[in-house]
Amino acid sequence: MQATQETEFEKKLFSHSILKSVIIVSVLWVIFLINDSFGLHWRDYGLMPGNIRGLSGIFTMPFLHGDISHLFSNTVPLLVLLFSIFYFFPKKAVLILMMTYFMSGVLTWIIGTRGVHIGASGIVYALAFFLVTISILKRETKLMAYSLIIIFLYGSIIWGFFPQLFPDKHISWEGHLAGAITGIVLAFFYRNEGPVKKVYFEDEEEEDEQV
Image 1 (cartoon, rainbow, N blue to C red):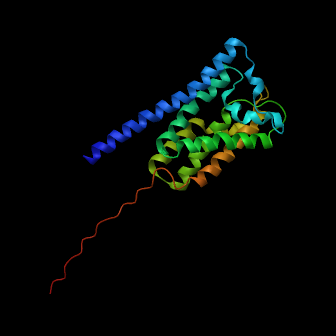
Image 2: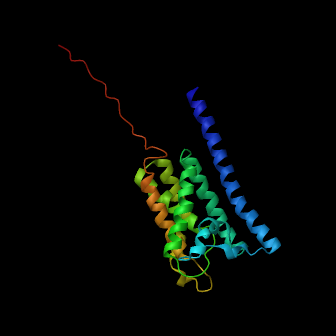
């Protein structure tokens, strides 16, 4: 009976985690399509580092993308990473995402160079570094296995810290760095949350002494 309940809970958690991830990413697509269809120039309202007027960009930056390829490059990793947060940390997922959202934006505003910074890549970096760091700290089997998949699929994001490797693109390496720092800090802060490493004990039978 208990095993059946656990299985049902796992199924619901899995499906709900996928659904929540899809909804969040869908919002990004809806905003992009509305902006492009009506020529609203919302990209001008991105984050402007060191500028008081640009503080609002802390909240708008992740929802704004330069073109469809920019948005698509963030879509798949966001789906995969958001799922991991909702699935492995269901009780703290919303708080983790809010902290990720806010902290990565504030750090980008502090360390960023001039210009308008847009895109959700800072959140992608934050979630990726959070997942990998916390899996190392917790050493829980399922979490470590999932983080290894993330490393295998998106290990190349490390090059996002070096914009000189992509001279034809305007890459916000500061946003990437801010995201990475945010993810690592939050991993230490929430290291006691989420799945717990199972410890197995062997039963030792005590033999009665015969007289």
